[in-house]
Length: 321
Figure 1 (spheres, one colour):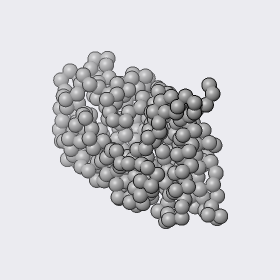
Figure 2 (spheres, one colour; figure 1 turned 180 degrees about the vertical axis):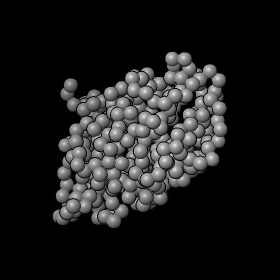
Figure 3 (cartoon, one colour; figure 1 turned 120 degrees about the horizontal axis):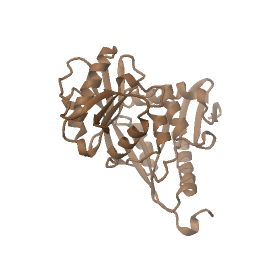
Figure 4 (cartoon, one colour; figure 1 turned 45 degrees about the vertical axis):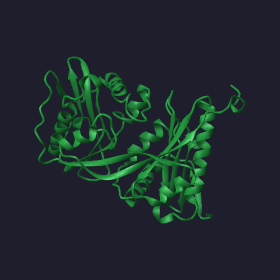
């Protein structure tokens, strides 16, 4: 590994990191999903110290590996490791070294932030990435959850009526605090959810350069936000990406999510997009998979989340306060 240079991530690495993560995803049977602006949004909002919490590995001018260790939001419990090794550079111990560093760094963050609490470390991969699965198993990770990547054409969109008493409108600036509160409530019962404060969440969503406000929707019941669909640019030409779909509990089981998505699909067709994709928990308690199928989405690939425990430290092992 003498020909490889290792350093911390800087903003100029974002395009190369996005390309690397997309290559890893395609290698495992998935689809490109990351843009340079999405990398920047993640790194600038959830990876708190680039010097301590990130690494990029270059061979000459080629990025061969990347790793990031986010800090959970206040009150959170989960460290979502990010990164991977270019498929053409695997088998040289790079992935083992990087994951070992990530685990040690996650433990350091845990000890500094919340040593009295049980945390978890999560990482993920496309379902067909056998290399990643073996690496995670070697380090004591076990598969815990599966996810579907679903896609729908923007032609032949079914006519889905808006539930009585509700209005679906386009995204408008100035309602972001209300939107954040609605999201926090809507996702409170979703598996693995960690609530983020308003500033951080907005930086990852409507503050991202990939956000497409004209192709996003809010649903209102009077002055109350009942649901929302937030749409983003994707790395694939002709495809938009629905990154967030939420319906607050009092308005569920009325067809609101399907109505909003049908509206978004129609709007995306008008904007020249041929397809729309989204990701969904395969075991979603809200029945989301069936809702998405109703408006034309079908499963195109699967991903896996792997988990390893990060237990609370004994009082004697905790750093001095």
